[in-house]
Image 1 (cartoon, one colour):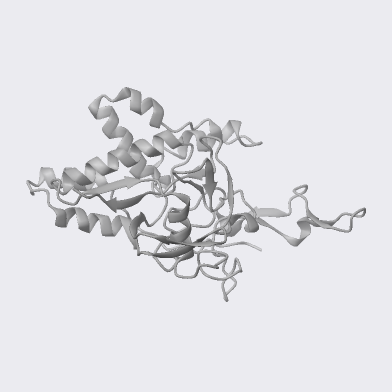
Image 2 (tube, helix red, strand yellow; image 1 turned 120 degrees about the vertical axis):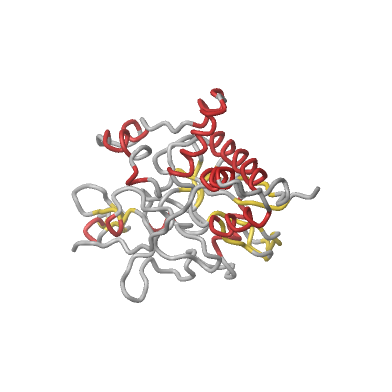
Length: 299
């Protein structure tokens, strides 16, 4: 059966472009301009409670990027580093595109050559970036918003910590299995709700010694869900309660406070893209990206 990718496409203007347009047009930087761009780029996650294992904890409100940081947005950051001659930072921040060949078991030279550079992938999540590179991006974004607002908005961008990420993915339901609220990977119309590794019933086998059911990857009975051979655009499928996309699947996301990535990715089976899903962070990867949060800074 041919699968279709159900997604809503968005055009997202990068922050550097907004800043340059303001300066070229002679407009004075202002908090109003910066706040407008913030509302386009981010959704607001209000103060509330979430579960930390078995404990209920309170979380202060914050802004979070609606989708994972895209190739286009990250390239603007790299271009700015080049323009400023910050070559040490550039070396840290550049994606390791060779991961497409070294990390996977099949030849992916087309992704080495095109995934980060071709315009067709500009709205797809950036991958193969180190945590240090993601943190440098956050610093740069903080400086850009400060420039756009003329120093008035007082925002700091950073990676979310795990509790903040859990608050964001769960919406207002602390016990949700997935960001969309239910325990199922399809909606009532049969549409798959995320980008993950989709196993068919032909991949389930019964161990004759233990009687346990197991999944085998031998043969041809598995596909990448809904037609996305690797990642899907950062703003795709459907948003959760807070307007956040792809919190489950697509790319695993870095967090600030632990050497973990969260939420699962395009190579994860459905059980491993749950809100609770984590795995060890081992460096840049074809399956790992990030999104940012922003909080106001006191004077």
